[in-house]
Image 1: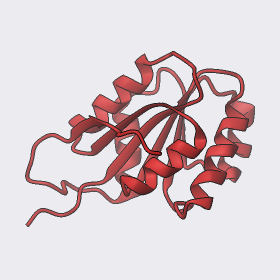
Image 2: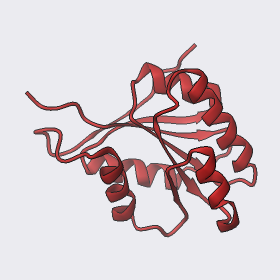
Image 3: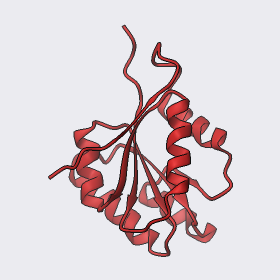
Image 4: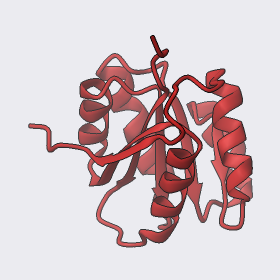
Length: 149
């Protein structure tokens, strides 16, 4: 019997429309064997509810707007309020290096700026989740998260 795959929720907090990075990283994680739930644009509360509903191990946030500190803080608060405070949180996007320490102190495990090699992101998630080929299937799965109420 195959072990449980590491489940990753990929989401964009807010209404921003820059999708390419989220799609590319989602596909790289899927191709590396992770189960990826594609959440799209969601409020921080929706991200937390979906993380619980989907029983994810990792939440990946993609933000290319200047309000990432507020969005990350709200998302982490919602995750804690929904009992998912121990989930691995990743942040990708245009993030000022001066903000890295504050984001890590908030609880962000990994920060990835544009140009980060996909292999580095995949390896980081593997190391942080101790994932070593947890399935007999060669590829992960990518699907859209169902709307939560």
